[in-house]
Image 1 (spheres, rainbow, N blue to C red):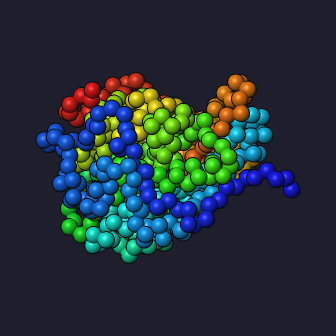
Image 2: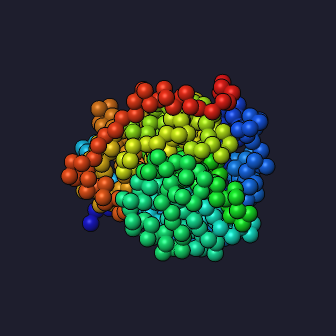
Length: 454
Ligand SMILES: Cc1ncc(COP(=O)(O)O)c(C=O)c1O
């Protein structure tokens, strides 16, 4: 056996003790979320009907580090630290001088990075005496993660699942039910928001969010939990990047470029923000590449404006690249990447040129994912398939330049519940749907009244 190391693993004692909060290091003036009625900066009071104070404090914390509660670190032990791999077989298959590493979050019980935030969210709500959490799920990953986390902390979980995914992924629903959650197909008839959207039977994340927020806002004992976009979710995910940093040090390398996929931005933020902070502080010159689907190209084509986080317009207005809050993406398979906006922190970094964004079609992404599976073994989720596609571009660029560049990929989850999508890809039935200029112009006209962002 050669002495070429493939896996870099950390002991449980190396589970991070703090989350990295990038908020105080962000370039430019802070751009606060707005109360949609008053157009004034939204404060903690705007959030108390649906979030516990522990999470609100994390959402607005000015501290560069936030301590991880002991109970949360205990629960993280179920699957953390996650492994970092050197993709030596893929390097050889691509015939690239690049050194390719990937941080694999698919070892969590739910199969993705999502429990990193579901666990602290369930914990803070349980601490606050909340009886039930309501949420939305697209591909089913977030709903599974929250169902798992609620079962760990003894609270109920109600999930509104995007209609297209509900139909395509019965086993994701069964998984959530196994952890004790109640799952509804969205749009449902259970909420006013759902009733108003029956003309969109395939649903969207925005519609499902509206349903879950409505349930939380109208029931005293119920709160809402969001699986991406908000500051506290990005914060929780930074366990990924901190571990990766320690594991890259074990390998004796520094990434030249970090690549990940973006739906609402949480896994990308989690992997990159600890590295981004070093760049913002002038301590490193790492590049960051965010990959998104060309059917839902928020970062590459969206307008940088204030918009609602949900379809019906119940959330505060968030500063972000948006395709319009009523955007209903085509029912393509990469369900987790179908959100109309992105995390404000991530959008600000794209705006300031710290992060590059690229959009890829799903056929080319699945092609990359299949090649990855045939060399590295793991069958990637359709979401990180887009990041693998971007990784291939970076590996080719390294080859053209003749440089042994170090590339770090975020492999946010496995695709074991997405085999219908792989099946469609193998049968040549996957369609590449582009977002048109006409779609964008129509979306811009429907954006809410709000101040322009300088
Ligand atoms: C495996 C996986 N990766 C990525 C995403 C995209 O979400 P985010 O951008 O918040 O990481 C999802 C969303 O469901 C997912 O399941």
